Length: 243
Length: 199
Image 1 (cartoon, chains in turn red, purple):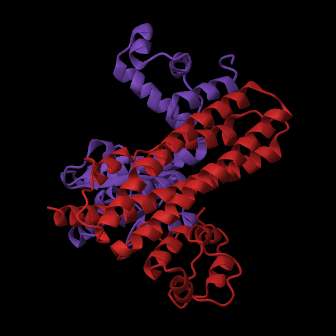
Image 2 (cartoon, rainbow over the protein chains, first blue to last red; image 1 turned 180 degrees about the horizontal axis):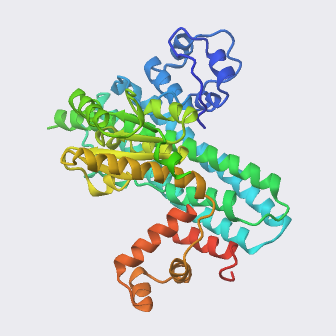
Image 3 (cartoon, each protein chain N blue to C red; image 1 turned 45 degrees about the vertical axis):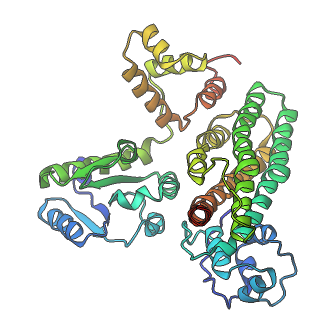
C-alpha cells in the first residue's frame, strides 16, 4: 500500500524514521529480508548489510511513498537476484497472506446475512484472483526460472544454451491488466450492495482491497520498469555472448 | 443565475513541455473572451496536489506525458473526478489512448473552437460534481443491462433490440460511466443489488 509521505530518502536517511512516516514500508523491508528492530541504521548501512543496491532500495521506497510512480534508477545485472527474491516474497504475500484474509472477510459478510449478492461477490472475487494467480504462477514457473538460468549463464557457467526459445518479449505480452474487476468490486461494495449488518467486515474488506490494489500496482511497476528492462539487457548480452 | 454561470472563472492547467505549444495556447486563451486563470505545472504529478485546492479544473495535457504512465494517469483520473482532461493533439496517437481524454484540441482548431470546447468542459466538470450520484439509467440502458446480465453478447442484444452493434456499445459505455462498473460479472451483481433481476 502506498502512503503519501514527503520525507526525502537518501543513503543517509535513518530507516526507522522512514517507517515512522510510512508504516507500509515495513512490507517492502520484509520482502528484502530486513527485519525489526531497525535501530539507528541508515539506508546505506542497511543496504550494505543485506547486499542491496541503495539505488534500488530508494526507488522502491519512493514507490511505496507515492512520491514517484516510476523507477528510474541505474541497476546492474548484479541486482537481479535481489529483485527476483523480492518479487517471489511479494507473490507469497499475495497468495498466503492477503488472499486468505480477503476470503475470510467475505465469509464473515456472508455469515452475517447469507445474502445472494455476497455469494456472487465471493465468486466474482475468486474469478478475479484466479486471474491474478494465473499471472503469478506464470512468473513463478516460466519467467523466474528463465531469468535465473540467464543469470547463471552470465555468472560464467559456460556458454550454456539459454532459451528454449523463450524471450522476455513474451513476458511483456503476457503482462495484461486485470484491474477492471477489482475496481468493480470496490464500486459494488461502496456504492450499491445493500447493507445487511455487515458494516465492520465490509469496511475491513474494503481496506484490504485497496491495499491489494496498491500492492499489485507497485508489484507491476517493479516488473515493468525494473525487471523487464534489466532482463531484456541481460538476454541480449548472454545471447550475444553465446553466439 | 445564468449570468453568474456565464461569468464563471475557468481554472485551466496546461501541462505541455514544448514552450511553443504552451505559450501558443496561453496566447490563444488571452485573446479569447473567456474569464480564466491558468497555471503551468511542470508535470502530471502536480495535478493531484492542485486538485485538492481547486477541484473544478480543466487540464490540457500533451498525450506524450500520459502514454508511458498510463497506470499513473488512470489513478489520478479516478482520484480526481472533477477534472476535465483535454488532450493537446499535434500528431497521431493511438485511438485507445485518445479515448481516455474528455476532449481533444488539435493544432487546427480555431481560437473560437478552443474556447467553445473549454466552456463545454467547464459544464462537464460542474455537471459531474452535481449529478455524480443521480445517474439513473435510461430505459434503453436498463434493457441492455438486463440482456448483458443474462449472458447475451453485443451482437445478440443488437438483434433483439433491433439496433446496431455500435449503439449497443455506446449504451454499454454509458452504463459503465453511470454505474462505475465495467465488467459483465460486476454489472450482473449491480443489477441484482438494484432489484432489477433475481439472483
